[in-house]
Length: 176
Image (cartoon, rainbow, N blue to C red; front, side, top):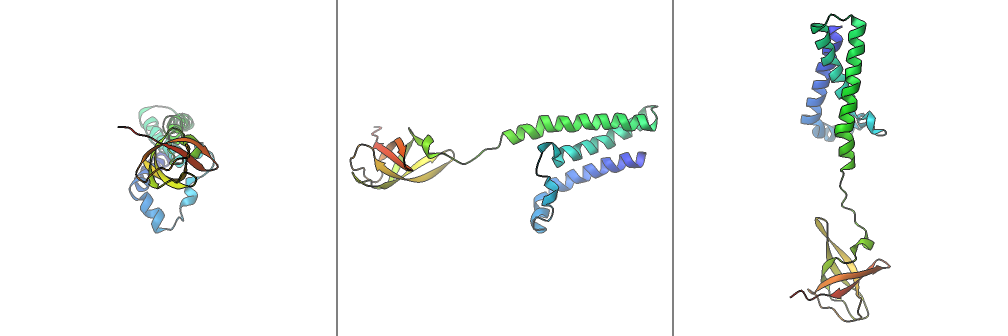
C-alpha cells in the first residue's frame, strides 16, 4: 500500500515540476503532441485539479498509513475523501476564479461613443478620413466621418458622437 501512495505523491510532484519548468518548452519541441493532456471540455477535469487530487491522495495515504492504526481499506477510503476535497478546493478556489478572470482585447465599435481620438487622415466635410482611438491598453484606427458636416484637419482631437454602418461620426474637440 505504501508503494501506491508513494507513487501517487512522487508522480504528482514530478508532473507539477515538469509542467511548470518545462511545460511550454516541451509543448513547442513536440509540436503540440501533448495537447491531448489539456482535457478540453469540462473544467473540473482540468489536469491541475486531477493531478492535485492524486498527489494529495498519495500524501494523505502515507500520513494515514504511518500515523494511524486504521486498516488498509479505511486508509484508502479516507485518503480518497481527502483527495476529493482537495481537488474540489483547487477547482473552486483556483481554477474557477482564473477562468472568470480572463481578459479580452476585443472591443465593440458601438461602445466607442464618447471616446476621444486623434485624426490621422483629414476628414472632409462630406467624406471619410481616419481616426486613432485608444481602446483598453492599445489603439485602433477606424474610418471616420464628420458628424457636423465640417472639415476636420489631421492632428485634431475629436470625440466619437455616434457609430453608424461601421463608421465613427466625430466632432472636433478643443480642450484648451
